[in-house]
Length: 408
Ligand SMILES: Cc1ncc(COP(=O)(O)O)c(C=O)c1O
Ligand SMILES: [Zn+2]
Image 1 (cartoon, rainbow, N blue to C red):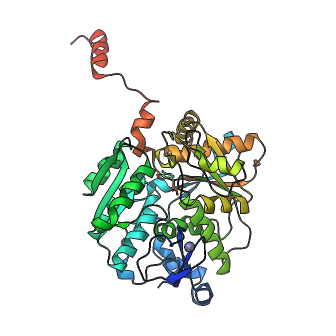
Image 2 (cartoon, rainbow, N blue to C red; image 1 turned 180 degrees about the horizontal axis):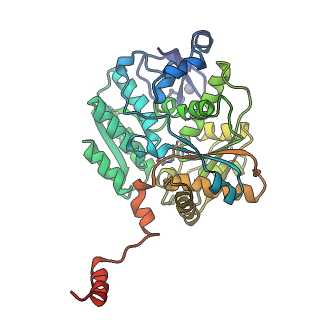
Image 3 (tube, rainbow, N blue to C red; image 1 turned 30 degrees about the horizontal axis):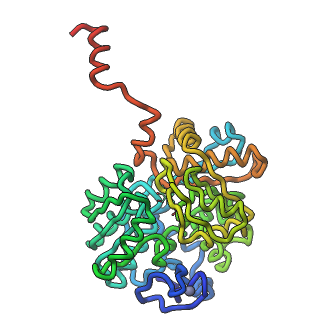
C-alpha cells in the first residue's frame, strides 16, 4: 500500500527508520517522510485513481501508513475546487478558483493532517496524544482520537473560538485553556509530556500531519487534469499546508505525473501576526517571534512557526510572495466571497481573498492568471468574529417594536 522508505531531517538530512516513534531530530529540525519514488513510479499510475476512494486516502501509496487496517478516516479530502467566475471577474481575476476545505470533517483542512497522524499513532501503538492548537487542529485531533479510541489532551488559548472548545469537549478530549498563545500551549506540553506519556502531535513536531496536508497539493493537480495553477494563496499560520503542497509537487514530478512548472506560492497573514511576511520582506531565512500577536483569524495567530524556514524557502523558490492584511480587510473579503459564491469562508480564507486584491492592484498577478485560493475552513466556526458584522437587535427591542406595530 505505502511506498514509505524513511524519515529525513529537513535541516541536517539525517535519516531514520520510518516504523519507529519520532518527534523532532536531535538538531531541532522537523522530520519529513520519504518514499521509494522509483518503485512507486513503476507500479502506481495516475489512471489507477479512477477506482481509488473519494477521500485523501486515494493517495495512500504516498502516505506513511503501511497497514490499511490502521487508517482512521472520517471522509477527509477530495474537497471541491470551485470556479468562482463572477466573483473573480469583479476582483479582476478571470480564472479564480476556491478549494473549499470547509467541507472537511470538523469543518477545516486540519482533518487531513490529523487523520494521517492519528492513523500513524494507531500503527505505532501510541495511546495518548497531546496538541498545542490555535483551534481547528484541536477540534480535528479530538474527532480522530475519538474515532480511534485514543486519549487526547488539547492545549488551546482561552480565547479560542467557542466552536473549537465545544467540539473538543463534545468529542471527549481533555481540554486545557491557556492564558496565552499557541506558543505558550506548546511549552506546557513540552514540560509535561514525558511524565504523562503523551505523544506530542503539535505542528511539525511529528512527521505525519504534513503528509495528510500535502494531499491538498495532489488534489489540485488531479482536479486540474495534472497541471498546476499559476498561483496558490495559502493562509499561513504554521505554514504546514504550504510546505506540504510544495513537497507533494516534488513527489508528483518524480512520479512523472506533473511537469516542473510550479505555482507562485503566496502566504497570506494577518497584520496583527505576520512573522513570515516580515522575514520574507527582510530577506531572512527564518522568522523572529511576533510580539503581541492578535487577529480574529485564529489559525493565523502563530507568532513563531516551527516550519518558518521551510515555508520561506518554498515561497522564494516558487517566485511567490507573502502579504499581510488587516482584520477589517479579511472579514470584508470573507463576507464578499460568501455573498458572491455561496462559500462562507473562515477568516483565514478571507485573508487570501484580501491578499489577492492587493497583488492584482500592484501588478504582481494578472487578470488571466489561473489562481487558487485555499479556504482552509468554514465561516460557521467563527460566529463570534462574524457576529461583529451582523449584530442582532435584542429580543426585548424586537418585542417593543412588535408591540408598536401589532398591539399585543
Ligand atoms: C482555518 C485555518 N487556516 C489556516 C491555518 C494555518 O495553517 P498552517 O499551520 O498550515 O499554516 C489554521 C491553523 O490553525 C486554520 O485553522
Ligand atoms: Zn537534524
